[in-house]
Length: 273
Length: 251
Image 1 (tube, rainbow over the protein chains, first blue to last red):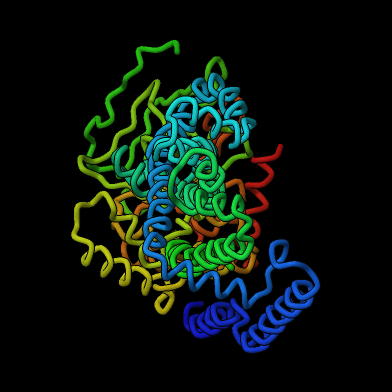
Image 2 (cartoon, each protein chain N blue to C red):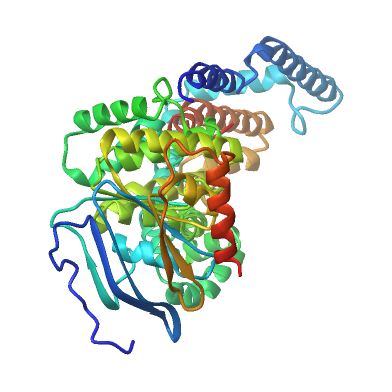
């Protein structure tokens, strides 16, 4: 049989590989997205020209405020502080949530005991954590880090737990039949099986952490983006509020498109599209 | 467990590639195997044939050491290496085909470059050269089955254990895989113990068929298959033997 089939098989395989993403349409997509952006700007412009600047500043006013803001000496400090708090809270959450998730996945008993704790953690609002954090830590970095941690940790924990429960028993048996040692099986089967779950949990946690960090900073910080946002709002500098918002959106998009998406595409290139 | 138990895994009889002696097995209070004895000669293909529930897979897991032995003895030549091919292909979705095959050598201690080279050689053997870099999800069922076979063959096992490895393939692909397996077996003189509930598959592949009766699993009869090779399922002698055996399996 092997005389005729290999070439037929090969072409079938290649066809399937090439057919995966529809890349041909991207110029059209880009055009439509540009049109969407233009429409958005036009609406904004029209609405702003009809209302006072302290309620809805126009695009050019916000752009101006953004340039002024970025020229300010404290700008990098504020962005840096917020970044530092989010990353610290997130790293702590990953460091604590991952082993806990693995432990819950490994032991059904532990999972049953801790299930209600997780339910409680998931129902408490981030704003409540922020209030607690101010009571416990006052105006300090720890306040924001704590809030990010409390928001991100359950998300990472739940996802890693899910992943640990979904490790394919058949693949573990395969590795055992190949005489792999226990640590080797953890490294070669469990780790790659759990990684996608960890990644989607971490992504969710980072996004949430980033958003709640601003809430925490408006309440319990004396610098950072959240603090500047509140300051601008208090002083009715609506154009500054808009400028910070715009900046946040751009930062998040850059992180998403520049780091997370490419990383995910590389890590999970083996997945069917 | 009602037994003297803890039987030795190697009552050294070098003549046989595998010796199963008076093996009985329980899952809790359920008796799955009763006093099963047979042996497999080097280079021989033996089929374990029976309906579901007669402990075929359990027996295979006992030989592979995936299930701890409770009663009886399983004799393998010292330092015999085993290859296990499961009912599912069990390819790791995050490894490409070459690295999936090389995974068979993961515990061998060979350096990675050597493992990969042997994986490529084995892929050529099963007719999958050119697919080394493909992901498992890009392969058809038959190709996945070939990759799984390559992963088992890459370590050059002394004894190949197969648990209905082709049962999920369509009939055409399955008989292709039969021919492929027999071609490789003839070239390498491999010893194969395989489990099936398909009488025709057993007749086409096996030198001897161990017929098992269900609940508890025990040997009903050991049937030598003396038909000339290659055996085609539709050839009169093969069809006749199949029909004859089928009557024994389903009385």
